Image (cartoon, rainbow, N blue to C red):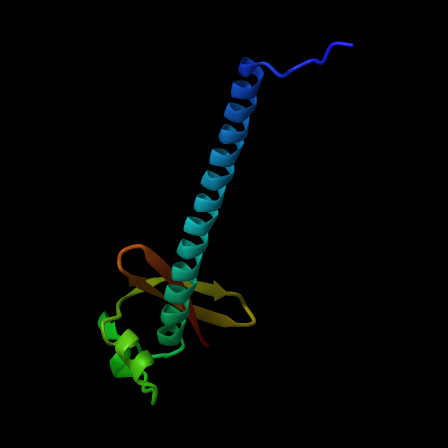
Length: 130
């Protein structure tokens, strides 16, 4: 009986295929880590914006979180120190509902909160008048 040996070409092809698979897996892992970091940053910014959005009387301009929020933890205070949120208010066209039975006017105020020109949230406030 004759033993069949593996040729050098077969070994090279299998090593090359394994290398391609390993490189592809490493690239997928790197992409996932990058997306996860971006998601965490976006979530953090959304949370910061939500802290300011809860206030009713936010005026146009810049708000620094360190001025609005007070924490006893120094690490949190340092993180919030340089965070700036830009506020823009706009009164939209009011909605008027006139019938024989009632007259209602709904004033709409749009507040846009943005951070680092990348994260932007819009909130609407409605005021109903007779």
